[in-house]
Image (tube, rainbow, N blue to C red):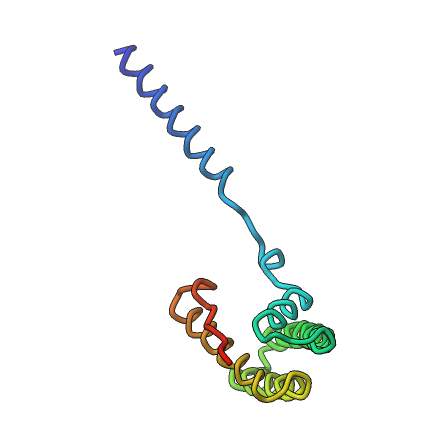
Length: 144
């Protein structure tokens, strides 16, 4: 009887060590760590759309402005949600207006053709995200 008890204890102890080892190796990232900076996003656009350095710098400024606007909008949305004053449709409409304004500003910098390419890339990424693919396979070929 003692042998069975000791074997059960050893088995449980061994399993607990392996379970804790798996948890330690799991990468833990927060949404802040996953968020790309404006510079990183501008760099990606520059690579994919073959932008000139001047265009890249202007795009980065626009993206920084977008980040500030988005942070302000998120704070406002949190406040509205807490006060239960906003509906989802109002928030979506406001976000859509902001996206259109940002797109027109980017289009002035990079041109219509490259903006159309960027919109196609963005649409493909959104399809992948909605289909549960995350960021895998979101690199459509940008052809001339």
